[in-house]
Image (cartoon, one colour):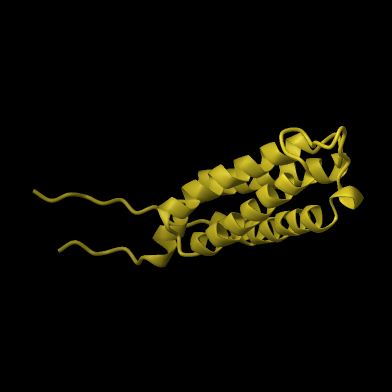
Length: 144
């Protein structure tokens, strides 16, 4: 008995997954920079009320953003290999990034809305067409 394997032909959306990886890197750099600014000058960048910004003080928020930025960059690099785990982690981190920006809407509304929109685009590209990354790199096998 032979098993038929149907390969999915890659579409132009594989370029969008690569775009999502590049945007994840840029998003990670921006998040890391936000974190560094919060760590080095918490009173000049973030609006803090009563010494706290939501859950964290400004330095805690800075460490959180710095860690998120590093994770975004590392995941984006792994996403280019087409690894399934990288796609899953990228979707989770883009979702976390969107939630973090949602909490910053009172402080930076335009920036937050732009980053949330980009995160949604990243999630869509990876979920809808992420599986095509592996089929593009692996040539189909011919069964004898």
